[in-house]
Image 1 (tube, helix red, strand yellow):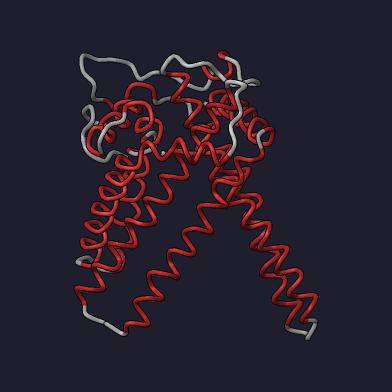
Image 2 (cartoon, one colour):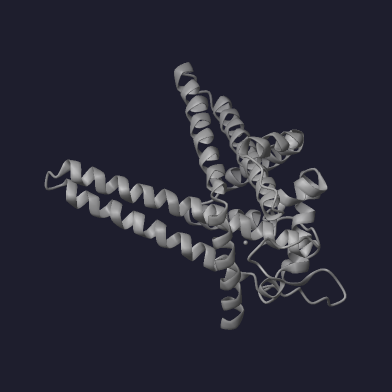
Length: 293
């Protein structure tokens, strides 16, 4: 077991080095974050200015917000995927060109954003009918299941140009066929970024005790450093986990591996699911709904 996880860590480490080689990948989540903040302020700011608190308008507003945010997130992720692929082929493209190429998928991105928004609204509606504990458990389980089932949705949309349902089935089928010892690599990327996140949180907490004795400027400076480290850790985790999945998807579909990552390194971290007369197994039937990254 530990050898399997160790193999995954080696792959995760190689991907980390690859990401730091192409540092413009860090700009994609930063751009997405800025745009989403602007969208949030614009949507909810406009709502507050209208002073309209009709419950149906509230629901419509939240639904619109989900669509806008999911659309932005998927658009930026596809652009990052395109940029990463070209970098791996020794044909680096600019961020503007990656964004431009992503515009070819506008309709598919909108359909996917609409699909995710509907699913999210359904999950939230069910949560409201449950007690606090039940809502927490159900919300966590549903979010995890949706995250797993859609783990490879981005490359599927780019390569297959499929609608939401077909994309979900393709992503789920890919997991069923190829899921195995990838856990180590995913754990590595998460732990690596979590170290920065924890450090940032600890520094932020420490800044409170610095501010209290009236060392305001020093305390704010310490808090700012903690916030920067926290944001960096979050960005790093976002990038590493997505690039990890992009590498696995391309390799398992016959693509070439980027520089610094060998076939032995990937093969030692992946074990295809054994076939036993069907496509079921630990995830259930092929393409069947949301499964339980």
